[in-house]
Image (spheres, helix red, strand yellow):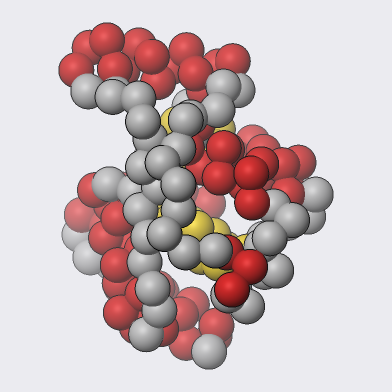
Length: 147
């Protein structure tokens, strides 16, 4: 999580009185070489090497995953998390901010293929909506529907 998606995750955690945990990729993805590595890993559907989680997803009735969209695909960290934890996730809800927002069809198909089912609910918004705060009322309505 970082930037807009971290913002969504923290707002959801606060609103739902939930625990937030950041997926920690062991690989550094900063600078030009980091960007090249990101593009390569997304194109090849590579998995990130994640640090161990502090919480067991099976301990929760619902897991909310906030993740960016990279080139219309799920990130290596989110991909690794879903593959490693899919049997332990009872109910998955998705939050994501990206350039195209709800138009990211391949992204949703990636998640469904990895999980073997669609997320029970998803909130997809655009970077523009985050920047101008027009997402806020929609997010609040979405989170209220999860209670």
